[in-house]
Length: 359
Length: 272
Image (tube, rainbow over the protein chains, first blue to last red):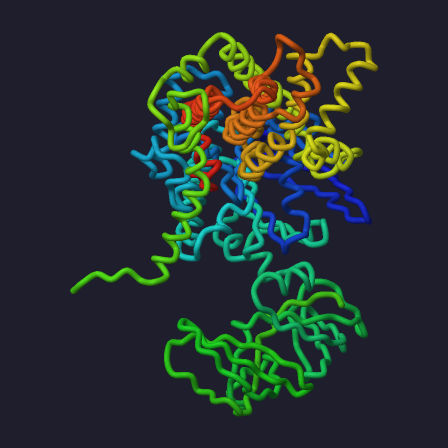
């Protein structure tokens, strides 16, 4: 098996006043797209800067394709980096910007020209080689930055919030464009973002970060459907979190008592009777019905509809449970919505549609 | 439909015209005075003669004139050579002694250059290098006076460099020295150019400091004019004034075009 494209072991950076990033352990396989996702200040950019060599770690190691690099300066690491502010050279043309890394590698002039042309075609910038960055739109600048990073055929591509400065429509296009390009080139990529939609759209795996460490690493589906912590559950998507106590555990099924009503969960993990736990129910799995329509094995809680929010593809229904807490249910808009504000309904879910977290 | 000019436009143009008149009329008067046919600075001039222009271009004046140009050019270059590392160092947000360094550089701004001149004279004498008086001392003095401008204009240029451009260059394989050569310095060029032009003009204009540290045979034009004035005003000085106005102006125009300093002065950086 080939060496991983990137391997971080116990990577740590200490700032003053007890602020610590790490220890970070992370492995990125060749061709893999891994996203560091988290709110600002979670340490994702510091981690990226340590990989690139812009920030010196206090402990731990960085291996790039099996090579020890944490003592190497950035210019010897052979990485492609794309920055949030593009960081283009304003005094150089688009072609000169893209060719910079090749020139630094002392590649022959004709070869540089050929590869720059190729890179410009790849990011659909043909014919703009003589422009200056100041004459380009935000999306075009981003493409120049991408081409400049890719043209050196780096062993690893680092993307630091590259889409944050673009407007929504363009951002959505660029997500697809970047991940298509990444797959075609098969280049291992670490992507830093605070935007969960970007992370879900583009990544093979997502590392959710908080307070300087990785809370969970996994594929998008795993992160969303089997969150490892309440933070992950609430940071990605919307979640109904209900506290309860395990009443009994028989076979694979747990019975819990909660202030919203009893619940039946087909959860993994071992919870003895009397243990406190939190139930995670995603809004699209929280269904609404009249009490007689609820399937036999499902959990059903009495609820009152307090608000309907029409969102085009779906309607968001805000509920008040019997303990006074609120919950959200998504209903796909494929017919007319049965419910009106003020209706009393049963909010129900199947045992396998809920997830359990230790309290 | 007749086009009427709005009243506020009339006021605006009047004020602008007055300001221009205030600045340019004295120069125009000086220029005309230099064409007097008699040895008096009459205005309007009596008769017409190029005699005073010929006098102004005699070796008595071309010597100091060329000396002033040389002094100004050398001062501007020395200021740039010293200002660049200082400007680069001051970009770092915090290091021990940053405040002191900044205060030392900016000090001469608030100090009358007369005081700087006296201090420099005394210092050189006490230090036993009194024979530096003349060109070397003048250059030292002018660098002290011009450094604040250079460091200021440079820092404006350096701050306009995209935050990550240098880091990006490093990631693309450029060592620190190459980053400096390929990214930092080219982008600091307009600031350095503006600083050099300020330095050139300040040096060319200076008399306060030069009065103390010049020596016979190594005197800038300003000091020479000052000494000549003790014997009365002659139209030669009017001609000299115009010459000493035109030469730096021409230099600034040419040099400004070369380094693209216009965009610096007019606040338009031309790049995002």
